[in-house]
Length: 367
Image (cartoon, rainbow, N blue to C red):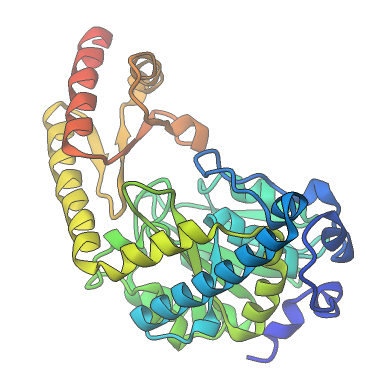
């Protein structure tokens, strides 16, 4: 799809290949330092190569070589896993990091990005940073994405549509034929589709279609994924059309990854047995947690992710505050325009049990 090259901003297309890290490179692309959005709070603060160079130039050069080797190895590993070329794989410290670089490459002032609402609360802010506008598409009554509505909101300024499967924060999914039809329709309109699959490890492939299969069938698709693990921060990766991947890799030098995190991620991916056991165990815990919540009278939405959306109506806010005071970490649905709901992360059996005991006490107090 040659039109994908036209999505790249002219200043970025003309950017000479440069490994410079810092504010000057940002200025060259048309944005100042204020455009840089910090990583998510749970991410490690990584030292940049520029800072390393201030200590010792040789150490920075050695780190760059190690980083390039680790990055290349991880891309090859991911390519083999998903049947793609390593040139179609991009890396980032988080999906937000990848989105930031992708938008830096593509978004112009007054461009439009369509997304479901409620959804990721960091996305509208990120889009507005680049001078573009966000257009909200309401969820269906069952809190799934209304993909058939997107075409009604398309305009001449629409450059990107953003969807997620499973959807955050509801955990709902889009069915196979629905996804295929949607992505093809957006391609006909010359609109780039971004599919966020941050929780794809928990999908049932008999119900929906994995992003790497969609990517092989559609040329107008970017897929975002994360590498989940128990003992390290998430590391994100994406499947990008080659017309965008090359540009992305040049811009992404502004926000370098840690070679240690890349090597750890490669180790986790290569140890498929342990990784799949982790995912399977979490699925079992999700099932057990949902059952226990239902037994306590809490209505849960069927989830295809590593969290549960629980409806508590009038008790949600008070329950959230009480659990927070007890040191139980959950998410207030109100923060995602889902008043009367709580978003419960699925954790280990011991952690889930602690949450259930605390919740039972809180619900008894609020009745």
